[in-house]
Image 1 (spheres, rainbow, N blue to C red):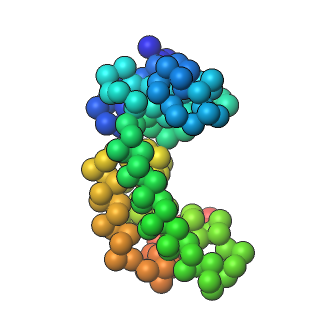
Image 2 (tube, rainbow, N blue to C red):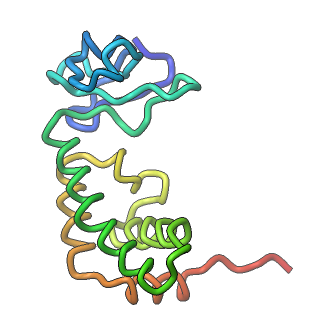
Length: 150
């Protein structure tokens, strides 16, 4: 078992490190790479980072697809609105959207990362971002910006 305590987003089972081929990864770049995989859920896995941690939380195909949909259709839509106003502002726009999403989901910022969400949280994220505009994101950033130390 894992000593780092990496758990499946779908069932909560502790995951183990195996090869992508053993986990059922279809991406040729991941077949021989190490991944974190759930021992209970079929094809629930997440890529292994260089430091040995998981990139996000291991999840099954439906959850990974939901994460991709939220990212591609909602987050990128909001970031695209920002880039129309400021073409070089991708990094700040992504940070603002992530902070807005964490606030909307009422989760700590490190738990509201899209690659850590389970299927139900992806649904909440979709609904939260679907009605939002980048102007809402900016208002949130201005309201909840961290105060500078004196």
